[in-house]
Image (cartoon, rainbow, N blue to C red; front, side, top):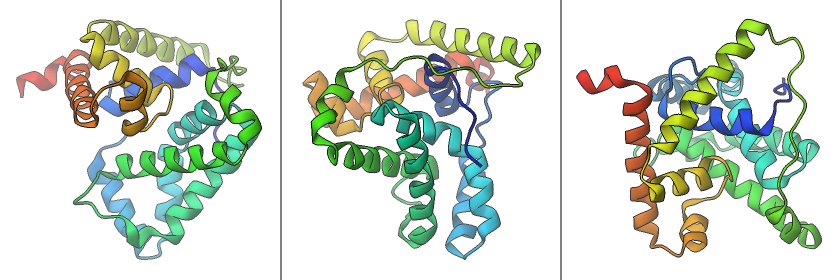
Length: 214
């Protein structure tokens, strides 16, 4: 059930693509996710599996980014979805979208797991993650499409305001929480949230220009 291994750069760019609903990404709408969360809260195991299949790659990418350890990240991935199942009644759709809620759990549990390894935590946070081997069995066409999508995301990111781009990269490439980004960039928490929100809106316009015409 675990996602296949991918390169770090591929995962990083696809994280941003999913966040803004870029064309060709595997992300589904929040409405679909919300329906799944409601079914999970009602005890529907099939809904949990569907949500896992839809979001596991993104969750795993963030776990790997935080822990710098593929095996530990895969274990954490399972734990996160187990927690989602056991505590589904805690989700409040009025406070966050399903994806935001899932990412909050992921970052929180990832940081907790990292802090449980004090001797390596400081080093892990500073080290650059080596590229992971590409997934086996990818077709040339699929690889070409993925490569093009990542190129589009990079070009769109380069057109953002530098502050917005830096905040988004910290959130989706480094797996940092908003509070951690605020501390890292020495900015107020509200300012960081604004950077990310406005940056994602701008990215959505750049990646889906037809949405601006609706």
